[in-house]
Image 1 (cartoon, one colour):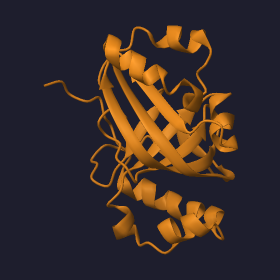
Image 2 (spheres, rainbow, N blue to C red; image 1 turned 180 degrees about the horizontal axis):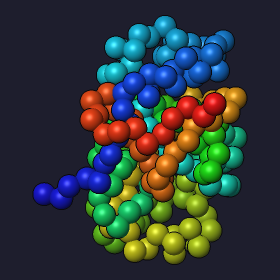
Image 3 (cartoon, rainbow, N blue to C red; image 1 turned 45 degrees about the horizontal axis):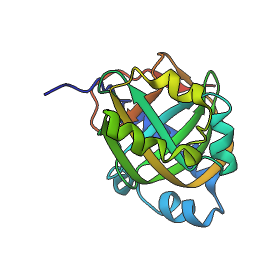
Image 4 (cartoon, one colour; image 1 turned 90 degrees about the vertical axis):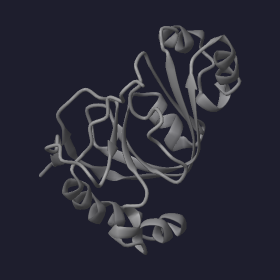
Length: 185
């Protein structure tokens, strides 16, 4: 069985982000109920993910045009088989702050073969991936994760310092890894 290349953010660092998130989401009917009224213990039952986005895809998500997020990889790596329905995704601009949040409504995992490629391409409109170049850039991939997202909300920027090049990080409670990000002052 192949191993996931999955490193996680230390839980104390994740806890330090929640006050900023809660303040940013005050008054939002969904997120008030999902985050603000929930305890950190209840929130620990779902995974929180930090997803790094480049334009135009970040804007497409925040505008509501992109309703399915995808991640393709040559090796099994996050979020492949690590994201669940109900998980929270923090939307971070590449080289910038966290600027949004959304919830995973449903996810699909694929070990890519000709049949799965056809199935995935059926989601091209929801992926905002009608350009053939999008598919050409991913043709060497062996694994794919698709996530239908909902309750997308732009938030005031939350600056963090992320020290590596990963495009997706699973932020979990049980981590012994030294944190690689910190709240920016």
